[in-house]
Image 1: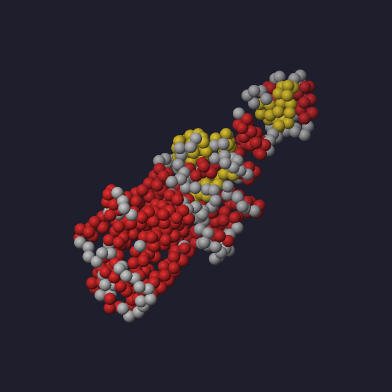
Image 2: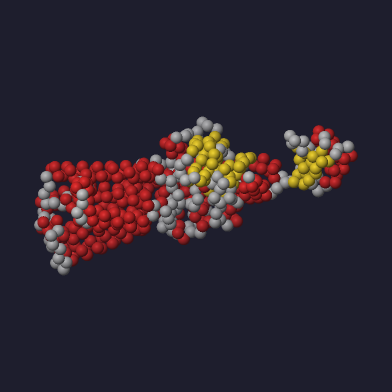
Length: 255
Length: 307
């Protein structure tokens, strides 16, 4: 298992798409934060506004599934699906005597690690750096940092469920293009479910899903019950989707 | 330990209602080079994909190093090196990086094996060249390097000479023979190029339309393909004595139906005919027989197609 994780990390480091995404995420994040902080781009009514952290408003862009899906699905397409289709290197791992369960877990862990870097860490670190560089370091006090820490910790947990969904799609489709398109469609569907009127059962499901939690975790205050619920939703989603992914991968015939 | 490296029992693969492989039983002993011969689409790769764990049998079972069952087979796969269909490589990595990724996932200690394997396979000069810029032959060699990196006991190669130039084919053949000789490496190799397999394999399995038509040793195949005179006389025992006494040869065999296969005097049929008739034998049939490997294969496959 350790060997597989090491191999996946080695591949991630040498994955050109990963570095392109890192560059794009860093550049875009720095630009957005700069424009927001200097007041060129006015963003109002964001979760950070409510928390008195309007300097971090640009971060809200990176917390919207419709946006971060583009980053995560691209990475999934060019890090996971491509191994099944273009290069076919997944064959080597399966033929090497590695358990499919271990292969799946190693890929999931490293893919999630890469996704967290480009979708959560880079925008967050860029935001903090820009705030300090542009002379607004005073907003980074203990209270605000506790809020950001709590919100992003819970967000990351939900995000792990999301990467599991995208990984499942990547394994099912076997193709980077299809992975990107299907994940975009899936995220649009979730967005539509959020906005449109829906039956009670669907509403109940949605309210207890990671998609609802992506915004809930940024509430200024959360009770212990809400935090526990959020953690439970994240873990349950992760477990259910991962089990589906493992079953699909175990039954999959490698071409 | 089982004397067999690989044993398939009634191995079958079905896609919807079509059999890609049907009831195939093959056995590979340690140190054997087993050549799987078949046309494109005959089922060779399907069989290799199941043996290597890429696909699952619809029916039948696989025994690898005496192990059966999913988890035991997965463990047994650690002792094999395989290329199935195309070599699976990272196009944006160099040869060394591809080997490093493979070394890491197999947990092979030390990086020396990478340099040694690249030298063994003749790719040590490739440096920083990315695999996407390699020729097909170089990719095949690198695929073989991946297989050999962990010193496997059993090598599975699917059409390994695809894209290799004539020198490359000879080098690969010599390398495989050397590995087989020096390390007692068991090899399962598939090809549709018969002459190529004929120079390498010690046992052959002929697959056609998903079925194993025949399994025979290299000697048996040579015997079947060897040029000979096919003689049928009214008294086979006397015929054999005449050949021994008058033509001074024992290079013949008497088949169960009384037919004599004589491997000498192909250029002097008249002498054979006279020797037999001079001893009062009636020659019912006398003809020159024997096939090239290609003809033998074509006849075998053709007979099945006509059934």
